[in-house]
Length: 115
Image (cartoon, rainbow, N blue to C red):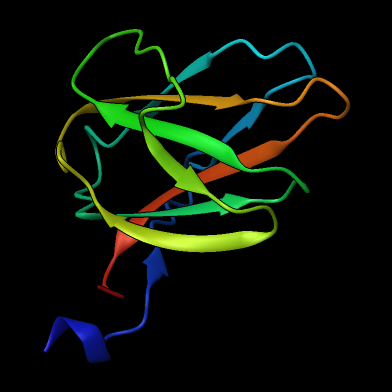
């Protein structure tokens, strides 16, 4: 049944956007972040790779994860939905790109449905 439910981002009127934006730069280093779902249950995470390059992403319970080219690859200019391993807490996220010629921006949006 879940495959027929559209993805819906978590929206809370009293808080600013819950989207986490990670800009990788062009340095071939892992950039960490935290997706906080402690106040809004978020079983799904929409990840958008808005850059032209392949980005590797890591989502885990680590406070400051480090992404490597062994993590989940995302082709440039794509969107994927993932099950959130920590739907009621703080999810450690990290992104790395292997090229040094241009930067990528990757968006992590907590929500429900879609997978």
